[in-house]
Image 1 (cartoon, helix red, strand yellow):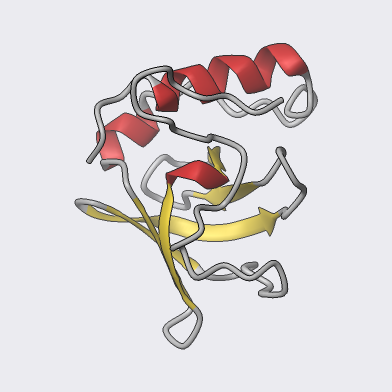
Image 2 (image 1 turned 90 degrees about the vertical axis):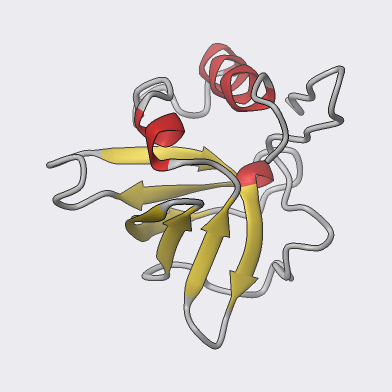
Length: 123
């Protein structure tokens, strides 16, 4: 299930070793900051090997929507500040494949989302 871009070594579905995520942190309720501003709060987080992600409730930013971010886009977890920083812009996140709660665990959806984020130049 691991999606990797052949050029960057991007591992979409695992937290990076320098992210500060230990697998024991409960990220639910943490604020999420894109490169250019806040996008919402984490509604759900997983830490499954080759299948980790966060679901972000975007609140008024994208009214009534949620987005699924693969763990590989997370740059840093600040547990003291309860904030997760991601290496994507707000526009990149907004333009990602739509969140599909019913199909979020399907291989096709994961491949599509992992390919979208993995196809971007490194930030």
